[in-house]
Image (cartoon, rainbow, N blue to C red; front, top):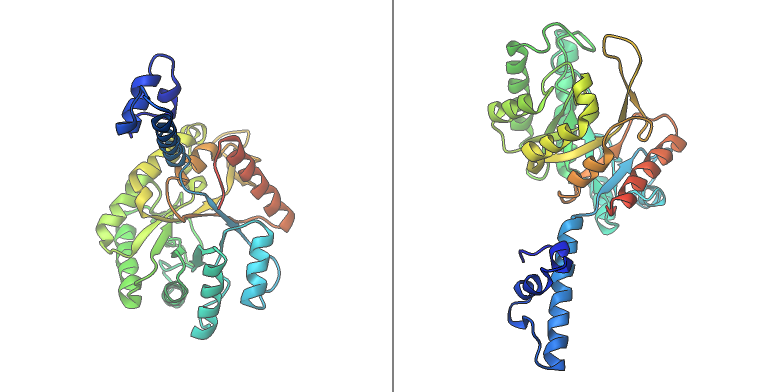
Length: 333
């Protein structure tokens, strides 16, 4: 159907638009029977347009406080918070029976396991730290594949021993190290159901849409995918005040490869040079309207809240994001 809902009801275009939408039921109707048939067809056509415009429900998730004791208790906690996505409830080393129990319970309750975090530094010059980090990525990717999580995610790392930034992090040498390390992780695990992702960071690749595209081409692995945290891309006044444009371009360029997203917010502090502070969603200026509008174009890609300290903060953040959704006719699944 080419006509939009607005075109169908626009004065002067209603008849041709509806005729185009209805095909064989085009106006005028010669009988009550044909009128009813045409009305039903028109309703179906308009409903189809509305459904297409609304897109997919957004899957929101966040941290679950308290110890996970069983699949049923875990699911109950997730659903009590109104989430339809969750961080992986298990750690590497879990037995396959336990993994299957959590995966089956999640699936039966319409919960997406968003990601397995493998937060570590695979670029460390300290060989012991580097080896442990790579092992953590291997184990995390293996768990993500066995439990059916959308992805295993890490940052690329830093040339600093433990944490970055470091003067060498944004060099071609480091770029090549990231390519080599990522290929090794994927090639050793050989995942078939999940993906390995690198979260965008301001101080190491991928630090932009363009560098992410370069990495995808250089790594050249089907199971390498994209993780989006738009706050981590906002590194200047222009990006801060135009973050909606940045988000739209990210989805346009990399949307089909995105497997999981993070939900944070950002605020510009007074003074120079630029001082940007991560804050709770709703307390900054991240364009959540655009973020949610773009996210709903994708199916089953979670938006995961993170870095908050209390259950109350997570609830406030979720409430804010849902309020933006309600104001813009965006559903949560």
